[in-house]
Each structure stands twice: as structure tokens, then as C-alpha cells.
Image (cartoon, rainbow, N blue to C red; front, side):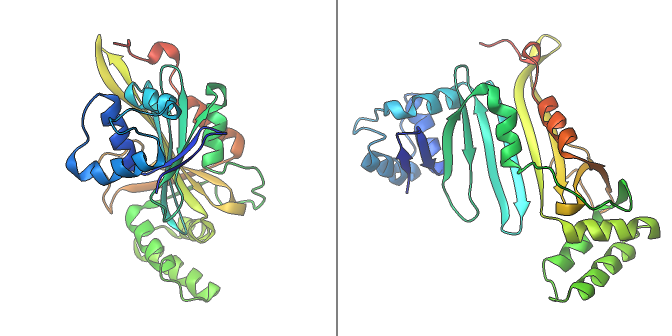
Length: 274
């Protein structure tokens, strides 16, 4: 069920509720399958009987109705994938955060000057990776990674047995002896892997054109952060195959912060507003 906290302008909404609000903000009637979601919003008092939107929704609907920039944050950890993000509107910035297994996300206005901080918080960026890696660059294939993930998603419960199984999987997939050990250690240390994608309407050859920038990172706990340089982001559907190269490069929190900052377009990169 949707809910709100007026003291902090926080809203908990599912995607279906957001679709209702977008339709109403455009002056349109939600489709029939969204009527139950509309009813939930009306019971909560966020939508009136005639489709009027509560003032609590002003910043959210304004940002959703005319986004200048959208940011998607996809994080996959032990509990599975979780989706967060930010919508930057003409006069407001709305962050939304999901929770594993929950339908609703929390939507809350944030200060534009804190945008990079919000992204860093969403991906749990932190210092403190103490272990020195055996390599600073790991090269293999997606086939090897698939084999390693198949092992860790059904672990035996014995650490050494799992380590040997992961090492065998990546070696059998063609990973070189020099790279098999470091890749095994990274897979076993993996806390989560995440991708931040920034999208905006830019300009190319004098016309509007969609623009994308992405950053993909492995968070390997004490073994640090590893930027995934291959497959190169942004990835299109069907672009990655088992034979696609996998290349990971050791990084640190400071470099990740700079990379997150670099994802955001400069003002002159944004296309002219209609």
C-alpha cells in the first residue's frame, strides 16, 4: 500500500502508483488496470475524487512530467536486484530507493548540490578496502563469469570446496592460469555489483538525441572496488554473449566518486528545452 510522511515530503509508491500520477498530471484518465492503484491513492488522500492531485505530489509530478535528467541505479547483491534512481526536473530533484522484496520505493526530494553524494550513498561507496590484490587488472570472458556464478549461487557450505569449484569453473572456461586465481578471489569476495546509468536529451547535428553514460562496478569488500571496463557500458540487449570479454580494473573510493561525478552532463551538453 502507498503511504507518505508529510514532515519530510516522503512518499512510498509502487511503479503502478507512479503511472497513475503521471496520467493524472497529464490530464488523462488512468487505464482500467490501474483503477485499483488509483483507489489506493484516493483512500490515502493523495488523489481526490475527481482526480485532483495533493500538493504533496507537486515536486514529484513536476520532475516526472518534464525530466531534464534521469539516473538509474541497479544493484545486485545477496538478496537479488534492487533498483534506485534519481529524476532531475526543471525545479526539483527526486531520489527514489527500493528495498529487496518490496513493491514500493521511497521517493524524497533532495538538494541538487547533493546529487553525487546521493548516488554514492545509494551504492554504499566507502573507504576501507585493506587487502592488496594479486593483480590490478583481471581479464577473462563472460562464460567464465557465468560458470563462477553458477557455483556461488548453489554453494556447498564448505569454503575451500567452493573456492576450488569456482577456480575450476573459470579455468575450464578458458581463463588463463595467471588470471584464474585473482578472478576466483574477486568472485568469492563479491558483496554486490552495480551499474549507474545517466540519460538525458542532448543534441547531435542540431537535433535532439538521447544520450547515455554508465559506470559498472564490482564491490568486493576488503578486496576493493573493481570497475568493469568490458563489457563496455552502456550495454544494449543481446550485445553480450558467453564469448564477450570480461575486464575488471582495480579502483578506489576516490576514483569511483570522480567517475560518478563525470557521468553527469555539463549544462551545455543538455539539449534545448522545448
